Length: 271
Image (cartoon, rainbow, N blue to C red; front, side, top):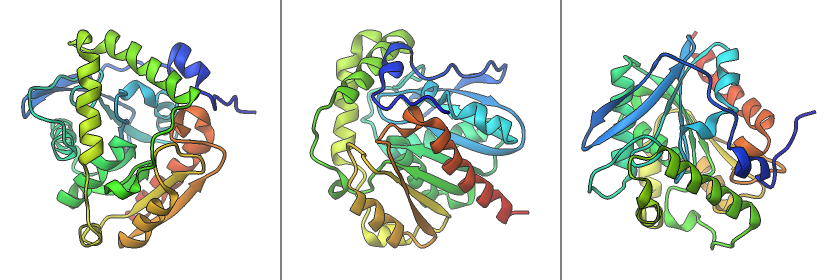
């Protein structure tokens, strides 16, 4: 039986499972920032985009599952997060989408399935809207595409544990470890004001999308996720039971099964 971490106690203490060893890692310069990445395995490519305040190591339970199923996996630290730097430009999902594209270009990935979690999901869908030829599909987990999708914040012990882990990781990984509070304020400003896609904008997205919502998500309204699934032309909706905004950490096997089913479906269409 899978061990659950529903209250994020293990995550607070030690983070996700360590990412596998790889010789294929580095960083590239793009639009005022140095963007860190690492890649694993061979096969059809999958890009994992983490959530706000986190870093690519938060995908520690997903990377081995993807490798084991024959996929090439790319993880990226979003600008200003983890090992990636930033300049004075305000955070924006469009800017972070350009970073993803730059890393894909560096690794000669013409197209990939994007798996996005929270802020990473926004980034993935915006990249799909702007450069659809580069995106085979988007697994869009735990995110909104306009301000009406966000719940009023209510603190919980699990959120406190997650924030404590993010705080520790930032101080360990960042080139500016003393700037965590400013980092939080700047990312929060982006989250409060972006994205703001209209129904007309969403209707122009023409890649396969799986809108994935957790039963107990602390931040995103279920009705908003269902609206996205109705409004994006090639989208479908999936509800994950018994988990929250942190499903990849809480119950990795369940999350991975849903993620792999979507990726397998996308690549089977191309055979």
